[in-house]
Image 1 (spheres, rainbow, N blue to C red):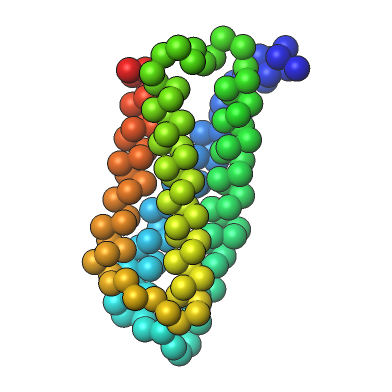
Image 2 (image 1 turned 90 degrees about the vertical axis):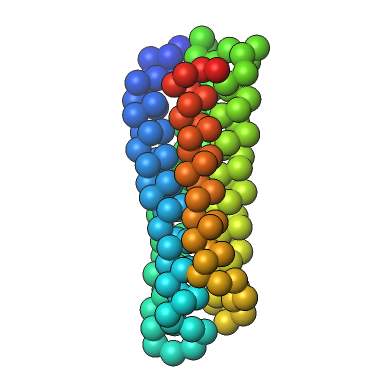
Length: 149
């Protein structure tokens, strides 16, 4: 198995990066949709239904699959011999960042259900502030992997 992972390493890494980009795009865009939904749309009507559809499809069609692919391929990279030195700090800080990103993803999924139920209580400003979470986590993850501190 390790020979297969070592041989496929460049391909696994390339598809992992593409999955991360798709996942990050969703993590940036869904809170932005929530901002507009909270500030301009309200909890009823045709536009509310349209936003619900956009939010649901973004989460289920783009974000969930890309998160799963990111995790699966990331675990393949970790299992590739010679790639990760667990005695270093960087794999642990990256893991913390990726787990944080996953928790944020789940929080967004929960908030989508709150909007769908017509029970949102957060403001557009609060969603704007939450929109910074993936940026901070991305900085931690990228610096961990590239700088290897």
